[in-house]
Length: 160
Ligand code: RB5
Image (cartoon, rainbow, N blue to C red; front, side, top):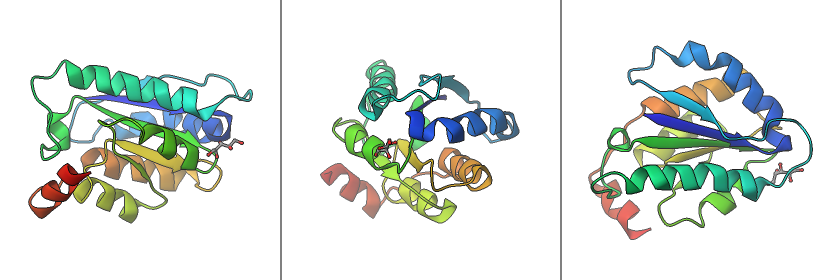
């Protein structure tokens, strides 16, 4: 599985922390390949541009798969994303403009689990100015390891 991570300046510090903590994620039960798509300094930048970097990569990867439907398990997908800005809000708004993206603004491991189980979220949006790195890395772990519950949730996700 590929994981793309992006942030603006508001999420830069938390993204750097997550990149540092990433090796501790290597024992999750799936092989992940992390790719940082920017920003690369804490200079002011526009969050829609970084959201686009992550979303277009995920969509390109999806296009190379034979068939993608919402009811499939996340692990059938070859890519997931993590977007961090100050509040997480702008990243979620931009990412959800893409039909293939279901971006979830989350603030706890429990909300993150529900975003995977019920909504089959393929992007985790984090509020970088409001989360400490230990909570955030646990949210990332939950995001990458919680399967979609399918069943009645699949019908609802298909209606999105
Ligand atoms: C940047 O100051 C801030 O607006 C941005 O990081 C994000 O919170 C937008 O939703």
